[in-house]
Length: 101
Image: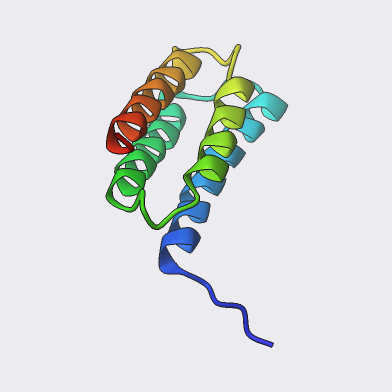
């Protein structure tokens, strides 16, 4: 049996996985260094750009639920990390809402 895998879904899942596990790792092992947070934020920014280019090819509801979950889990992480993820999430939500008009 073969499962059809789309490049859009696979790449989206990789980017989500990277950010989700970065947040989970921090919650388990404690605060990290600035470059660590910058890397995760950079991947989230890449994910945002990718989603906006492929919004019509991706299950956006499932994706936004996963994003909301890791943003919520980041609450309490230092260095402004949660604030940055929250700002990016709100901006993405607005952009998708505008795209759907």
